[in-house]
Length: 262
Image 1 (cartoon, rainbow, N blue to C red):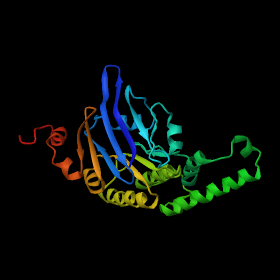
Image 2 (image 1 turned 180 degrees about the horizontal axis):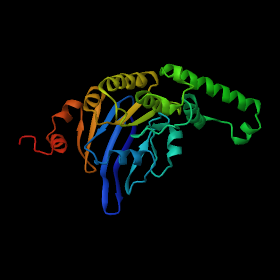
Image 3 (image 1 turned 45 degrees about the vertical axis):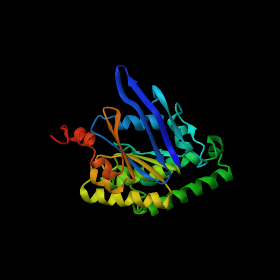
């Protein structure tokens, strides 16, 4: 069953077509990768999906409640899409650098908060109860992701790999059904990348997630992906399993710049 799909998504910036006629689907429980050379349009595609950009043509659909009835999310704001159950990380880590690890996760938890500003300001008992529950849930999440020992540390002081993990923890705090990861292994060494591969697998199972990711580390992509889409100059040039994509002449040409048989 499709959790996310797009029909003929296209976006133009002036005379430049950044993504052209891109159709895809991500099924429940899958790990799907979107790959392609630098400048292929991958992050732009994620920006269309998450409401940062509205497509010039085409639409994006999301099954927000696991009912099988997908909602058209084209034109919705990023915060509304997040509330529907889609969370995202970014190529460049976007933590609140001067806040602690726990505070970063708590900010994300507030997305699901039922009390409003006034009830919190006047400290109604039920609002205080909700705040305590959120704190407990945030601490439990950090424990599950092995970040609890660093809960009081300033996020910018963490090693790079832990900052990546914290960004994913913050995304998980919004209680998503679908997690979008934009180059989660960027800047990681081989051991960190190997650890990340195991981590992504573990959170998919633990939190019953569907994962759609952009990634340049081909070892990670080929090992973890159920299916792969390949973009080049904004157009999809291949789609299939890791083996099918690896052996596709158009993919080889896009990455190597030469014909496969040359």
